[in-house]
Structures are given as structure tokens and as C-alpha cells.
Image 1 (cartoon, rainbow, N blue to C red):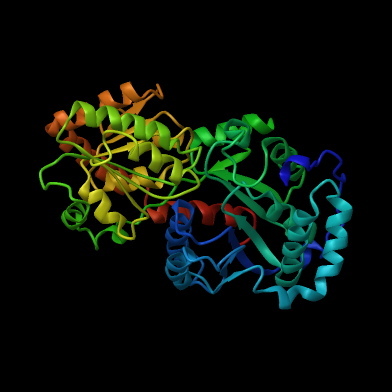
Image 2: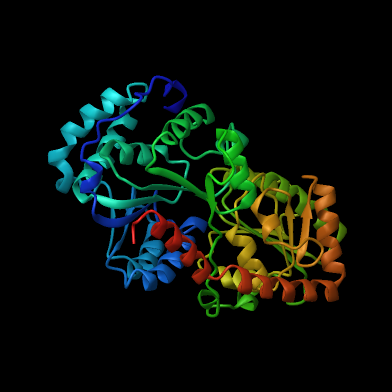
Amino acid sequence: MSTKENLSSLPESLQPLVPSSGFTGPIIWWNHHLGFGGVERQICATAQALSEKLDGKADLQLLCEHLDSEDSTAGLEQATPFFANVSDIFSNAPLYRENSAKALRAAEQNFSGLHPVRQQLIAMYAAYFALTKPRLLQVWNADYIHVALAAVLAGVPNILMRCASKSPGFRHPKGIESVNDKLAHQAFCYLCRFPSFFMTANSKEGLEDYRNWLGLPPGSIEYTPNAFVPEQWQQGKDGESLRASLGIPPQAPVIGGIFRFSFTKNPQLWVQTAFNILEANRECYAILAGDGELHAEIQDMVRNSPYASRLLMPGMLADTAAFYDACDVLLHTSRCEGQCNVVLEAQFHRLPVICTDCGGPSEIITDKKTGFIVREHDPNILAAHVLYALNNPEWSAAAGEHGRASVTRTFSPRRSALTYFRIYSERGCV
């Protein structure tokens, strides 16, 4: 759909559906779904801490595009206590139907280069925002540009786009969720014309990458670090049971990986590295948890190897705390990341982390002290670092203690919430 779209002939100005002065409604956060990956965990952690500053949850709402998928159930249960309302755009259709025709005409006129389906999505959101009149909209995934375009069309006076990785220009051709890099660049450049639009990033490297990609001056994008809630990880930790269920001997060393099987996460590199480790250490096992579009390819890669009995793929794990408890080392092989939740969680569980040099993790891992940042995306070099951690238990134990202390100290939800509260305050939203 996106390859034929073009935003090169956008209007210099828009006549919003509602004057900006009319937007005195709630703060609305938007996310595509509630599958409860990294973004969803950040939403809940930040909302819980921010609700105290917002005098309870009555002023904060969560809007999604989809809540009907099976994997949204757990995320919905986690998120609901922190918001006055959690809903999706389609279930709200009866509310904004009277605005829809006007919004669609505006979307077709102003965004004529976009596919009709995307124009319809923009119109739906614009009609909804014209009805609810949020004084601030925060989009938690910057890859979904149609939501921000809709907010501009509606007239929302404050539109915050949160960037959780590097720019689409870096991730092209396969690492962006919803649009190609050319279309994304056109959209972001257009949005940056509006005083209502501003951006944050959850890693300093990602911030600089977006800024350079868009040609923005220093200070244009705010740094908003991830939040980590230790209390969420105190229960349900039973690594011994997980090991037993997977047939792993009690004393066997275990390397772990847990992520979405996508191009950006580079699961092929993870598996190739694991093969080298399992070849060098015949007592070692590997657990690769997760799912995604490359799952079948990776499963075949493992099944056809000599290591299938020791490289175990349990799929999605409900008890991720048990996963960390079952492992001795975490291996992460992404091409690019923001401040990765998996790295935060692993370090809190006292695991040394061996990670490719891919952006945000270098702001979490203290190289050689809490793990290793490996510049070369090479399975031999990565395996050597993992084997060092396995062969040096005293170093690994110290790395685990340092990592836990660092995560607890640096990534508190209160710090994250105060950052957002300050940003909201500076724009007169609270």
C-alpha cells in the first residue's frame, strides 16, 4: 500500500476541523494495540507513575487502533487500571460518525497522495479528535504517521510523537512498521512545520539519528528515558520449573534471547551465534523465546541444525520473569534499538548482557562492567563474549549485581513520569 503513496504536494496550511482553542478535553495516549510488548509495558509503567501527578487517572485516556486480537487481552488487563478510558478507534465509530463525512473530505483534499485506505484512517481519527477535543495527543509509536496527520487535520494543539528506535532512514528497507522511509520523511518534515507538533525519543542515539534525518537543530527533540517497575518482577519467578519443562538439566549453563522475530531484531544472527556457543560448550543450552513474522524461518534453521535438542524455542512466554531466572546470560542481536526493555529486565534479574552495538542498549549496559557492547555483528565475536561470561562466573556475578543496581537507580518510573509532566507543563497541558 505505502510504496505508491506520496506526500510531496502537501498544503502549506490546513483549515482544522475545530479551532485549536476548543481543545480542552483529556490527554489521550495512542498505541496501535495492547499486545504487551516493550511499548505497552512503558505505557503502563509511565501511566501508573504519572497518574499521581495528574491527580488520579481521570484526565488520562488510552486509544488504540486494535483491541480485538487475542494477544491484547493481557495488555488490556494491565493497562485498564491506569486510565479513565481504554478503547479502540473502531468501537468508538458511533460517537464520531456525524463528523466522518466532513473529515473524509478534508483528508482526501489535503492528503490526496495517500492511499484511500490511509485517507479513511486519517478521517476516522480526525473525526474522533474533533469530537473528544484532547488538549494533548501522545503517539507512543512514531512509525504510525497517520495518527499525527489526523491530529493536525482535527486541530489538536499539542501532538507529541515518541520515537522508540532509530529513524526510518536508518531502518529502511525492512525495519519500519507501517510506511516506507521516503513517505515517513515527507510526513515528518510536514508535521514539523506545525507548532503543535513535537517529538521525544527514548534513547540519545535515536534522538540524534531522528534529528539528523530531519535536519532539525539541536534541542528539537526531548530525551524521555524508559521506565522500569521493579515491583512487577518480584512474583512469578520460577526458572527451575521452566528449565524442567524444557528438559534442561539443573546445572547446565543457559543463554537466553527473547524478542519479536523480525528483520530489525536479527534472529538469524542470534541463532548463528548460539550455534557457535553450543558447539564450543557441549553442556550449554539456549532458550530463544518469542514469535513474529520470521518464526517459521528460524524454526527451520534450528530444526535442520545439529543443535535442535539444545536450542529450544518455547514461543511466547507468559512468565517472562521465569525466563530470566532460567538463564545465565542474555544475548541480544538487534540491528537497532531504543532503550530496550529486555535489556533492562535482564539486568534487573542480574544477568550479564551481551548485545550488538545497536543504539539504546549502550545507554543501559556499562561495557565490560554489566555486560558487553559488541561493535561487530559477527557470530564468532559475539559467541566469544558469551563464552567469556559463562567461563568467568565471578565476573558474571559482579556484572549482574552492578546491572541490577544501575537499572533500579537510573530508570525509575517516577523519573520518566516527571519528565513527561514537565514537558506537558511547559506546553500548558497540566
